[in-house]
Length: 537
Image 1 (cartoon, rainbow, N blue to C red):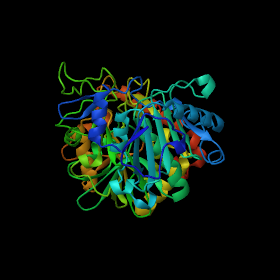
Image 2: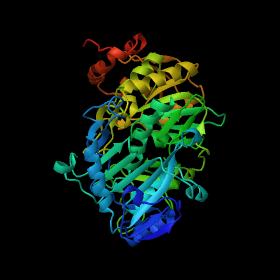
Image 3: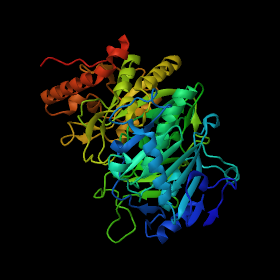
Image 4: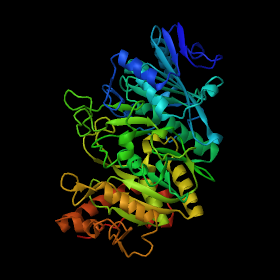
């Protein structure tokens, strides 16, 4: 066995059961990981020097194959359900773990020491063990990076073992199928196999922090992006993948704190990660210059296609998947904030991809409406983000992140409500989805309009503007905004068939009411008053 790279001399893989490996590569540079990937014929370079790979069978997360070990720590704390927090037997985990570590025998292994949480009070050291060098590059780009001196003394709090080539036997191993992602809170291990999709790595640690921070540290963990203005005003953007978190937070006029995962303490908002994982579908320099310019040497592109016989990427080609991605370090964004934290937020934006075309492009929410929509988490799953999703599909994802929340949703909602009330934070709903009709009829909201609406909210330009009230959903929306045509602000005006709009609004309202039944017993009067009113037609 050979060891290459920088490591803590007191740490080794044999202590965690990985023995008789060929070569262990510890904390290699992005350039070396890129070179290894090319030598293994697992990737190629595009015209800007970024590494391009194909993640194989899985080009998105597989939520049905994500498990949590049920034991004394999790039995009474995790919100167990058959959709996201699926229980896994502790003894089965041990047997499967032993199989996976044995799988690494006689193989090259790539090891990465990193950490999560930019606020040092909550730092979580992570050791990532990968079968493929490009997965290790992903870990380098997405997690925070310790200095070379820190590596010499680092001890991991959590271990991630990712073996894409290992296939489970469901009948023996207790999985649903050959792929799996399992979190063990007692042993502090995330075990991933049968899938090379890198998003499972980052979302595994996000799920861990969503358990640890609210439960043990009284810190609200959030599936959101965050940025800060020149005057120090922080804004956060909640939303599922594909709703615009990364795109809208990467604003040339504001400093980027982070694009996906944050914590809200008594005195700040801080980033969990050290990088960005941006969607690339229809990417252009004109629309998203910061993301475009971040695709360079050291970045990792996934599942994109080049123009024929060239190394230049055709970002409009989604023949492989709509969930094309790029992973790059946060400092690849010119105006990224370091350290990646900001003050208490003055504005919160709930981002929804409304495939029905019912919601206004921007709405102002009361405290009760904010709580209602946070618990509801309405959006549409965007094509490709999860296995099997081929077009936008309506979903209710509590707290805009249900797949990653181990605790009961009311834990996160109650914490957010307390913070909004304490700091008098303004809350806005942004529809980044359809206008002029539902999906297949209307068109997607222009990014330039969405940016203008958000800037107007941040700059207080709606303070003296007249608002209208939506007759079904009750939220107020402005009648004018600089840079935005007035006729799109009222969504009903954009539909050629007004009766069809009214029916669609009623249908959506009915779905909202039915979905909220599970929260009704926990909701206060203000939240209940925010339920939509189904019109008699």
